[in-house]
Amino acid sequence: MTRAALLVLALALAPVARAQDREPVGPFRVGNVPKTMGPEEASASIDRSVAYLLSTQGKDGAWGTSTVESLFEIQYSNASFYAWKEAGAALAVMALLDVEETPERQAALEKALRHIVDSPPPRRGNDWDIDNNWTNLYAFQAMVAAARDPRFASAEWRSKIDERGVDYYRLLEKHQDPFGGWGYYEGPVVSRRPTWSTSFSTACVIPALIEARKRGWPVDRKVIDRAVAYVARCRLPNGAYEYDLNPIPRIRGGEEINSLKGSLGRTQIGNWALRVAGRPEITDDTIRFGLEAFFRMHHFLDAARQKPIPHESYYANAGYFYFFGHYYAAKAINLLPVDERAPLHAKLRPHLVKAQWADGSSVDFIGSTYCWTASTAFSILALEAGLE
Image (cartoon, rainbow, N blue to C red):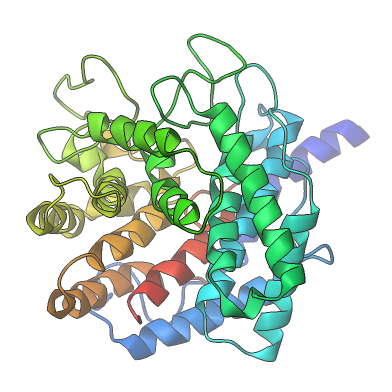
C-alpha cells in the first residue's frame, strides 16, 4: 500500500476510532435516562467537560489543528480548518468564562483568550466556502463576553479584547448579506459580499451586537436592524424558522426542513434573539410554545445526533444542531418568568448528560477536533445557564 493510500485510510478511520474509544457516562442507555435532573448532576457533568477541555488544550491555547482531520471534510477549502479551530476556541472561551473559577481553569481561559486576541482572523476559503464567518460570529461573541468579565478589566486586557472585538465586528459588517444575514456558504450569486445566509447563524450574534453597541463599540445600528429583520422574516406561522430566507417559504408538505419538527433548534435561537432585540411578537407564550415543541418532539434531535451526513435524518435535521439547539433552548428558558425556569432546566439536563462520554467530551457530528470542542462547550454553556 502506498504512503498516500495509508494517509487516506488513516484520515477515514480517525473519527471512527476516536468515537469508539469513548463510552457513555454511567447507566444512561436508551430507555434508561431519567426525565429530570437536578443541579448536582449538572455540576458534575460540567466538571467532567471542563476537565476534558483542559486536558486537550494545545500549547497555542486552542484545540485541534488547522488541517483536515477527516475525510468527511476533505471537500472544504484549506482556510476552513483554521476557521473551525478558531471558532471552537471562541466557544471554549465562552464556556470557561461561565464556569466556577479555579487556578487551572483560569490559566486555561487566559491561554485561550490570548490565542484569540493574538491570532489573525481567518480568511474566506474560496468562491463558495465562507466558513470563516463561524469564527467572525463566535469570536465576536467571545470578545463581548470577555469584555464584561471583571477578571479582564485591566488596561492591557481591555485594550486587546476591545481591539479584537472591533476587528471581528468589522468583518461581520463587511460580510453581512444584502438582506441582513450571515451564512457560511455562498450562492447562488458569487460576490465579495456574500449573498446567502441562514436564520440561526444570523440570530446567534444579535444579542452580542446589541451589547457591544451599549458598551460603546462602533456597532452600526443599521447592521443590527438588518439582522433582526432578516431573522423576523424567517419566522413562520407554524412556529418554525426557515433555514434560510426565501421569498416564498419552502413548505411543501411531508418531511420538510421548515416544518416545526425540522426547526426544533432554530425555533429556540430565533425566539431568543428576537426577544432580546425587543420584538413584541415574541411573547412568553411564544417561547413556551417553542420549548414545548422542543421537548415533545425531541426524538427527532436524538435520531439526528451523530448522523455522518448533514440533514440525512427525519425532517432534514442534522447532527450538529443537537448541542447548539440545547444551548439556545437554555437561553430561551431564561427569558421566562423565574418560577418557570427550574422545571424546564431539569427537563433539559438529561438530554445533555446522556450524550456525554466518560472522558467528559460531547460530540453530535463526528469530524475534526473542533466538533468535540464545540459540542463540549455548548453542553457546558447550556448546563451553566440552568445554574444561574
